[in-house]
Image 1 (cartoon, rainbow, N blue to C red):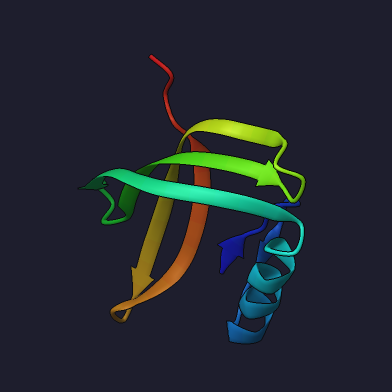
Image 2: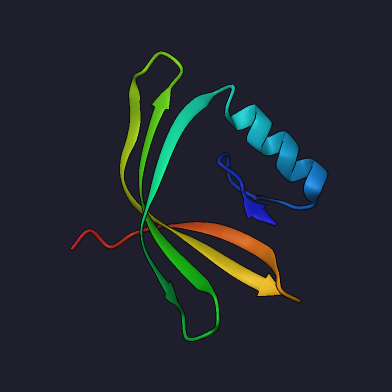
Length: 87
């Protein structure tokens, strides 16, 4: 399950593939991992610098976010995106 760009969640290989394929026809994201840590509940937090441009090279977002992964039976179960602290 992945939290989608437009809000809500999607799940399953087919829906996720369709989502990522569509997303790359609308935006040009660059995501660079900065750090990783395990949260107390076992989730994996990946802090990333994310720069998102539209297909005309106009900047949409440039900042820090966290990709939060939960696991089940050794596989990724969910991925959510949170704004990182700007302190």
